[in-house]
Image (cartoon, rainbow, N blue to C red; front, side, top):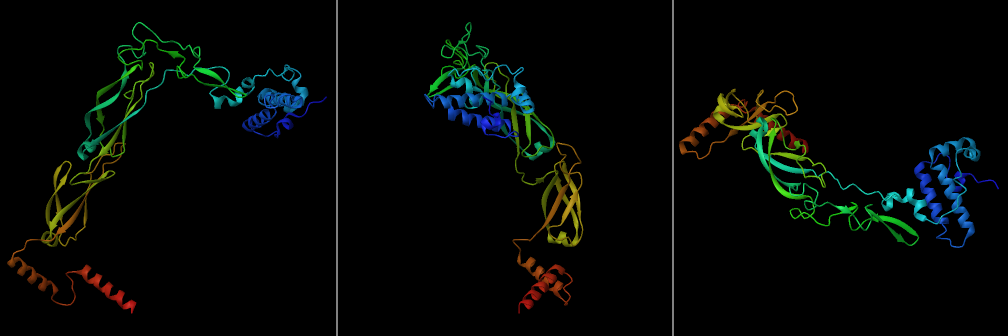
Length: 378
């Protein structure tokens, strides 16, 4: 009796991916498995046929030979994979298919107990001056370090961990659930394959203890909020001698009472009297390097920006130094005396004489626009 096409047996085409072939096999095998069809000889034959087809199509070498020569291509070197009987072990057949779901195939592989320590983050607040110029800070970090008493093994000095009696050192145990035979993590050793019968008194068998470490951190000039500095190996110690994690220092630059930072540039506001704004003058302007003189021309309007080149920030990743932008704000005088008020009224009358309003061009332009706006509405 001639054999059916293996692709037809699994209900797939020749260009079906390996992943979809596996899915089709799982679906067909569960449908015809003898445990689900007791006493059904036809179902058992179909199950063997499905298993035979998958055994060929899941093997790249056998699949290539089958695609080129058909069943005849498997007669030499294929080695009797289709003639054996079913041994009744459901887990053996489905080990490669369900291994990712039930924790591995039939090999009973133990997970490694040596694990890398966790990374830590430390939030570091800096003043603007510290961020711009760079600084070295001392920080205290609570973390886990290897236990000095047991050298991180978790076992009492002079003793050592022993193979788990529940799983025999494999880290996994086999469980029977209906017709499924699956592997699960050993509940005694939690997958490590070893147990500590006489734990260390200092760390209680964990191999690590809590400690506050004092570290020195060098902050490079030009850092800004959101920048991170990695200290390799300064995180939590790994378990059972594993490597330590890293410590990430997260920078946060605090607000400054005078300056505001925007990337490589600094901004500040300087109040001036309306007399200085009208007649011009010289101001002292603060910078991070000290005071500098700023010449304000006559008839300066409020909000005018003056640029002081090179008085900003040198970026931490390189590039030209930024600038300091000074915004002048005209301050209205307060707490005026009667005489000062009279002088201001005289000044107002003097500037309003005539009809051209040349002393307040912005005011004149604004009210002309308002007038035109209302005329257009009528």
